[in-house]
Length: 130
Image (tube, rainbow, N blue to C red):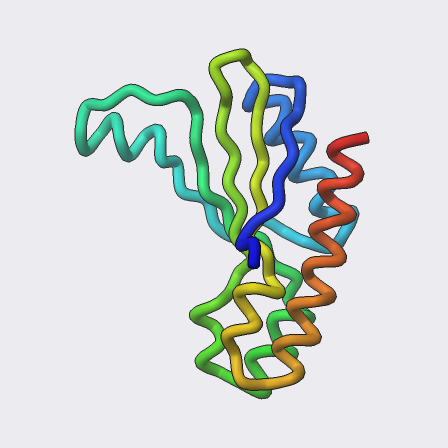
């Protein structure tokens, strides 16, 4: 079972980030968290790496459906995705598979939300890949 699906954009990191945010909003997914791994590595280890970030994307209505039936399933939220710049100047975007992650929950509603979230994220990938 795969835990992620991805696409690579033929643009640099900053342009790709702007594009990804816009396409996520089209699917009613907002970025609610961001971890700048590049900055952390530089600060904590004085290690230079290309741009690399971990994001949390969320649709509050879908999250509410999961939390109403299984409050502890919040440990499986939000839908994480990463972005990193490749040596050739392209940017890879990799999305966590919400079906795989929410499949760990014990409720059918969590599984249904995972399927809906995956549909949204697959549409994001499709739009980004077009």
